[in-house]
Length: 114
Length: 113
Image: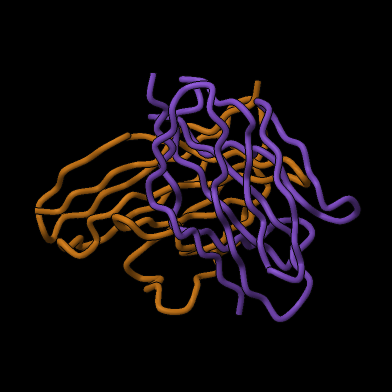
């Protein structure tokens, strides 16, 4: 069985500062990894995904994540955050290339402080 | 662009009554619909998967007779919580997929009193 751990439930960051949201996973097979963002009153949107190839994945809105197989991590980073990045961020893992069955983490609420 | 909407966005009902949640896809035909439930401070938990025109497949521990899912068309899926009880109070989210495309609904908050 697969699982996802997001250790930080809330992360406050000053505007224009860098941020890292942590995600660790466990699985007995190869996995595909995803980060989603949920803005208030909206559905989850795909930020980025790792399927194969380069371990550094770039997504929308200036976010990127690095897949580290030895540490079973897929941390999300942004070098300089903006007020509009305030949202809930979910890490997810799938053992299926078609991302049919996703296992989600509990989410991290990112709050940008002006 | 394509989007998935849910209605209602929030609902309060009395214990023992039934509640229907609609999930509609706009400019997008969802061949598969996933229904999730999220309790406070917990992750989204998959409840069931349905393909258009077929019966839903429920995850272990989810009562199919209590959570009725209908996916009669490529643009509409419904989740009916029958004889709701306070422990069913949760945030319900649908996700429509078609190939690599996927869109989440904004969720429905159900409170059972």
